Image 1 (cartoon, rainbow, N blue to C red):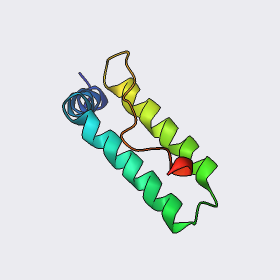
Image 2 (image 1 turned 180 degrees about the vertical axis):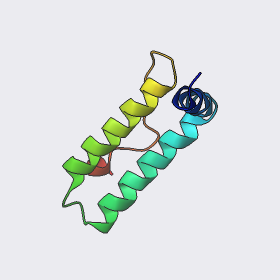
Image 3 (image 1 turned 30 degrees about the horizontal axis):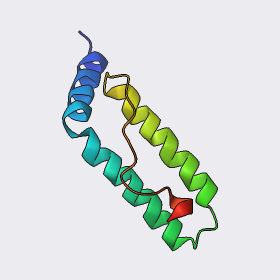
Length: 76
């Protein structure tokens, strides 16, 4: 098993155990950035947080979506 395979296995395990907390962090960061920019870039922030959540979901090894814990940046 190569170094990258081991790293991916560890990352997948961490996401399985803490995916909900990671998702909350993604949402919180998106909302903070949206707040700091006065909502100017809400569409871009929503797109970026969506992609981050998709990546997180693909790492958890399950075929389920992690539900948003907070409203999207443009809807807060």
